[in-house]
Length: 294
Image 1 (cartoon, one colour):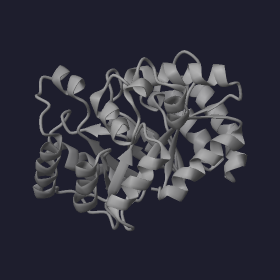
Image 2 (image 1 turned 60 degrees about the vertical axis):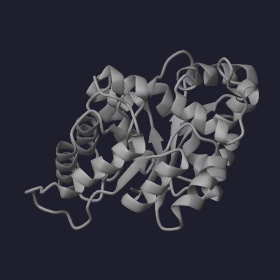
Image 3 (image 1 turned 90 degrees about the horizontal axis):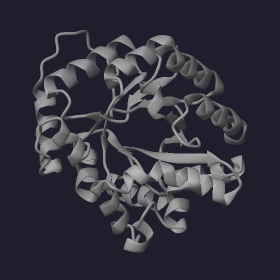
Image 4 (image 1 turned 90 degrees about the vertical axis):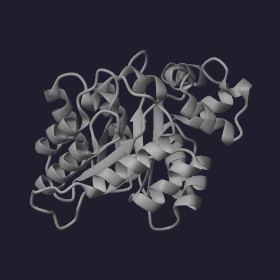
């Protein structure tokens, strides 16, 4: 993983591949250190999506944020990570996650005991023999982690944690569990829009889906957010905690809050009106780059 600031965007793994390549090259030239591709309904297979972006660029790192353990068996995941880690040494990060119950069940699996499932999956990965050249520096392995038990597993069995849909106070809690020598990579949604009503409307359109997933809701309750905060598409208090909005300087202040709380790297997700828009995201990131000192 390179740099303290990167980009997480769902359309890096969707839409025409050439547009994703062009965006990756532009973001590399702007100085962003790492791009993160996700795995969700309708997205590209994330290891293949990572390979497309790695081949199109020369310096920027590419991570999966995240690759679901229910989408491929542990042998296939280990082989994919080894392949990309050797072919693009020092530029690939494997982010693994247990996903969400509704998505897992849609694949025909049973979502139960996610920490135990992840532990068993890591055991199988570690037992896999891969007959490909070994890189000098194997690809880092991060776990998607929100709550203490998965964060502890991230500390004990991985290189660290990738968190999503979290405010800086979660980053501080995660760092306390991970200790000083594990990577911590929170995602931060951002909107460069100083008008509160417009910014919060964009934020709520983004948050609508996530506030219906128990993993995120339960994590926010642990952080002290109430049923009133979580109702509908979120209270102003919750919206402002999850999405950084305002001027470029206001957004950078939130990013610094994650760094101050213990993040090694913050993955920015620029939000756009109505639907995710990669071109608009790149425009926002161009505006942010000088304020970030890139």
